[in-house]
Image (cartoon, rainbow, N blue to C red; front, side, top):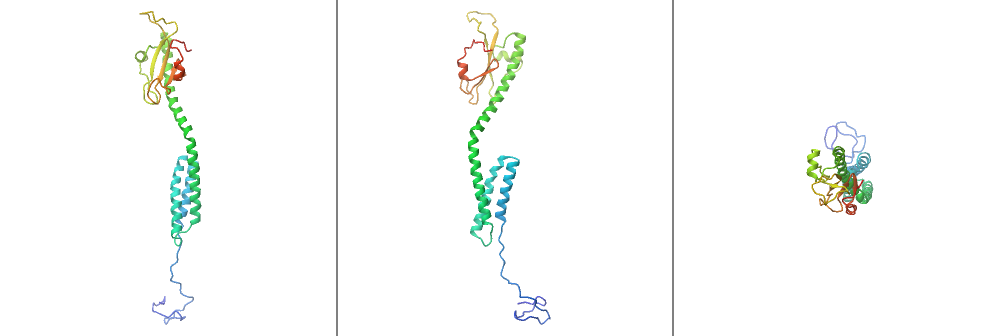
Length: 239
């Protein structure tokens, strides 16, 4: 071996070099020391804690990042199993993977069970928007009726007397309007102005087709389904 002081080659059995340097212990073993890498396993654990913390505290949508946790934990398990000499943390990574898979399965089941309610809420928001537009039109019609003792006859007259076109529903289809004479109207009478006592507002609904089950219908400020409207005579006073 080499003397650490002068650098000459000496026998390992001697206790002192010719230069006077003395050995105080056995020379270090030159065999490389293997240090297991725990980075992949600890990264998976850190990602799991991050996703859980942010998902609970900020938004549940971040739970989809659990896929990243599963991938990181699976990678750490694979590395530790393939090369345990260099990669450690197998049990930690395996536990993280099991937790992530279990939590993901539970969240997936919960999400699937919530789909019908989410769809219903989505439909209610669409319907609420359309109904609010109908209420606004109805208020304008009531103001007009107080002054003119009747509603406009049709959409053309509505635009002329109200000063604006009928708004669109949630699906960007224009609302349909029609005014109707009351029960005292006599169809045999000609050239006589009959007061328009009733009105109907109708949205074609999400399918965009009128006279179907998903129509949103208001008569004189009251909402009806398409089936209910078909049972109501047009001349019936709805108030």
